[in-house]
Image 1 (cartoon, rainbow, N blue to C red):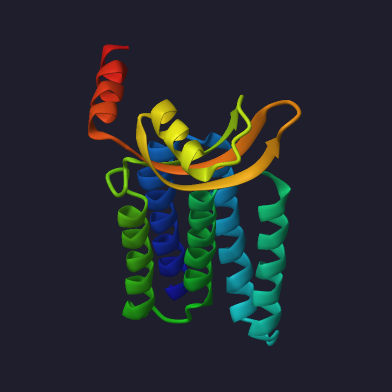
Image 2: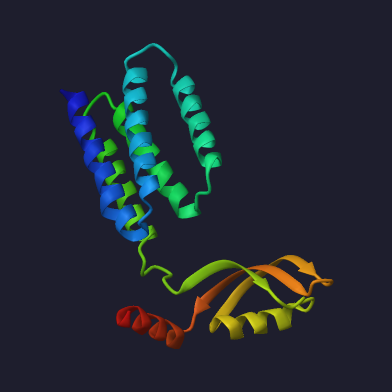
Length: 194
């Protein structure tokens, strides 16, 4: 009975995580399957390990290996890694529970709350990061920052120069910036008009 309740709690939690938080915000269908499979797979393996004499370290080592393989198999962004580990942790918490412990359920709810707030579109919604190939070779960081602010219509917070090509006159940069309120208003109106 306890196992069935914990499976149900895990399934409710993963449905909220994926279909209530992740997919409406990011719309990446391929990761929905990955997150669901990881969660249910970890839940199943955890349930088996919890009822066997195999050490907990063996099970956690297995999950570590699986997560490394998954994270290296395709391009995945940092916020998607957070969802991936949330799916892992939810399955692990539910699968290793031998009782319906309010602490475990509370930790699962806490994890969902953290993802709700931490990945909310309004939290740092004007901040962006992108890699840009510029058609000018910049060796002066002040001039580079000014040029980027002019191109982006934004306040540049950090620039990392990846490559300067003086022969072909180009610069590859990673830039972190914040949209100006006027730019964001124009962007919002353009989306509403489309």
